[in-house]
Amino acid sequence: MFGLKSTLKALVCGALFLASVSAQDSAPNVAISAEFPNAIAGLTPNIISGEANNLKVTFKNTGKTDLKVNLIVGTVAESDDYNNIIRNLTAYRYGTTLKADGTLVLSYAIKMEHASREVGLTLMADLIDSNKNHFPVLVYNSTVNFTEPVQSWIDLQLIFLYILIAGIFAAIGMFIKDAMAPETKKTVKKTPTMTPEEREAALEKMKVLDEDWIPEHHKKSPRVVKRRS
Image (cartoon, rainbow, N blue to C red):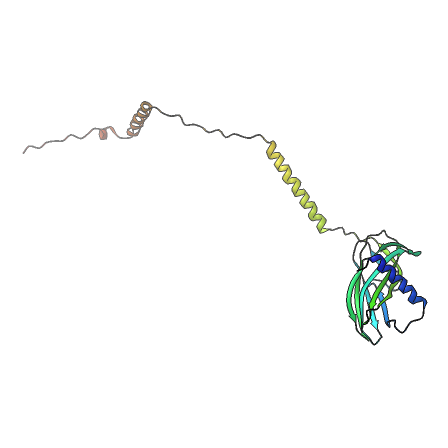
């Protein structure tokens, strides 16, 4: 395993070497094209800062042997000086076979935060043949524009966060209110107890009250008349 910086340096040097000399018999015959799906023809492609921007890379093998796309790596540099590198991009390993006389389409995601301005983008691919030989090939080398993401007026996650915070503060306020409020004691009325004499007098009074509605002639016990035999 080798570091990203050393890999990138080797790929860039290899690409410059291949570009400066005529094609050799051992070099793979591969045509490569790369495009951003949302790009407008004739205009510099836009890369949204902080979001994943997919680049569609197409490999067309015109040779007679199978190849393997090992990885794709890239850099973001100043648009007026590609040697002034701003940041190294993530190296994606694929290990995908590119068949002879075949076409392979891969996706490379670019995600980084950067201020809105024009920069230079360089991408390199590492191809491996059946003899384990590595061939760095240029995938993309042009300018792109970094742009800020479009802010939406309706952000459901932000609204949910506000509701959650409001609920927490409301719960804390209710807890503080209950803690600061004075405790109210319930008064229990006690029924006075009666002495046995008071209880007896009360029963007699109730008995007298209960008999008031009975007519006087019904209160007297009837006389028993004895008949002579």
